[in-house]
Amino acid sequence: MTLHKPHFLSEILSVILVIIIANFFLFSLIRSNTQRMGTELGDKINYFAITNSKQKTITDDPCKWVIVGDPDAGNNYAKLEISCPNKKILNSLDLRAIDGANLETLLVEYSRIQGIEPLIFNDKQLTQWGNLKNDDSYKWQCFVANKLANKDTVIGKTNLVQCNFITKDLTWK
Amino acid sequence: MKKILTASLLIVILFGGFLLRKNGFATTPPPGESTDEYSNAWVGLSLLQIGYPVGISGLPSYGEHDFRYINVDRVFSSNTVMGNAMPIDRPWFDHPPMMGLMTGSFAYLKGARVFEDASAVIIRKPVLVLSVLTIGLIFWLGTLIAGARAGLLSSLFYSISPLMVINSRLVQAENGFLPLFLLSTIFIYYFEKKKQTKYLYLSAVIAGLAVLFKLSAVSVTLSSLILLVSVKQDKTVLIKNITRFVIVVGGFLSLFLTYGFAYDWNLFVKTFLSNSGRKYGIGLQAVYELITISKVTGKKYLTDGWPLAGWLSILALSFKDQLEKYKYVFVPLISYLCTYLFFGSESFGWYRIPTYPFLFISLAILIQKSMESGFVTLSSLILLSPIGLAGEKLLSVDKAIINTSVWRYCIPLLLALSVLLSANNFKISKSINRAILLVVILLAVYASIKYNQIIDISYWYKTN
Image 1 (tube, each protein chain N blue to C red):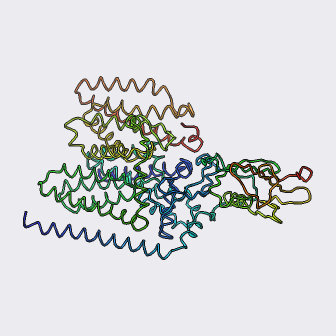
Image 2 (image 1 turned 90 degrees about the horizontal axis):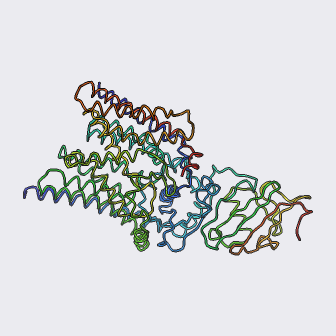
Image 3 (image 1 turned 30 degrees about the vertical axis):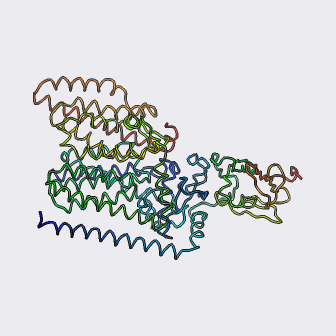
């Protein structure tokens, strides 16, 4: 037994040495990388999260896709109702996922989620969304909590946001 | 000749198992049924590109979560995520990153660069490959324990069981460390037979690697250590071997600790404690449900008689003189069961994945023993579980697929005949009995394959 002791000990020490080296290497790699990234990290993570996949099919129909279900966000949500010529859809959006929620940021984020293009505001008003563009007969009108809204209108918790593409004859004030 | 036949049959089983898993793998279970799948891939993608793990959590340790709508696979338009924005946290410490690195690397190689690129059709592919590897490893372990016939039967049953087919598609850590569980067990077997230290080290390295998939893979270490202790060896040698094993596994575990320390030790510890503090979601009825209910996810069940058949075979084999002989089935199973009961957490179906290979090996051993002895009634009776349950599902879809007369008249007749024949020792009686068991096995295989073929996305939504 005594003859084998040094052999076993050196074996174990070798294994431990490999472990220490591996840990040191891993630690150095992670720390140097984190320091190198610095403030870029947040931007990169944001990029990963908000960039649409190139595989995602872009649509020009704002009413094509709907967000199914209600988020588990307490009262920190907003409802977004979109009325297109032949369809009306209702979505619930978690406001925690939308920075500085106003009408513009909400619609920009919704368009990004669903892959809707384009989204155009002119003079603070929505003028085109997908292939639905203001013309002589139809226009977009958006309301927040039943009040006419523009792109800067703040979206409060539980607010209902309605964006309707309707004939000029039916336009509200 | 026998080896060629065995190899040929194994290839057929592997290929068949792969085809069953591949068919509809990206749609069933529906993407988003478990957001863990995406989280794992995102951890890998972010680690590879920026060296920082980012994934979905929701654990309170992270404080304020960064909620995002990442509409991969258009999950927000399905009823899987139910409109919930995803809580993104970083650095992500919920689990060790190995599963993420595996799926994230594959996704990266396939061109994924942002989170939305990591669709189910991409990230589930490496798991399909792993599951075929698992089938092969089940054959290997089954063969070592009880011969090639048991190896073939166990891998066949595992490859066709509908629950296994569906489970094998999920990007869950359990699917990642399951082949490692089998491999570590195999190497301990070789260590016992050949007494060569290299096998011990191989087993330990594999067990250590398994822990880097999920901490519950500590069951692999537990299982291998118990098996190591059961190996006949000098006390001093045993202590040395345990030391070797523990140090190697400890080394891998230390890598995870270093990983946490390098990013944010406080958050790492808080997340570990948060994970440990999860409610005991499996409940005290956990063992009952493990045996009687076949779950896929948290809320979805897929009726399948194979796990029950496996558990019944465990009971049938659990006699005192069999425990030592089949310790390579019992010890891993019980080790994982202990870990499962200890960790608790939610009653997700994928937590059960590591038990299944050992159940199927046990079933194969029982059938093999029945074949050898010619007493087939018990095995035939146990196999009625997968036949009946698959048959019932097929019948609900199309009465033409399965004929109830086969069940109603032939099965009782066969069972009665087998009991009658078992009562005497004539050679021909045993041959007929073996033929009966073979018929029952073929029926079970046929019914399971047919059942697999009806499981698609519309079936998924109809099922409880």
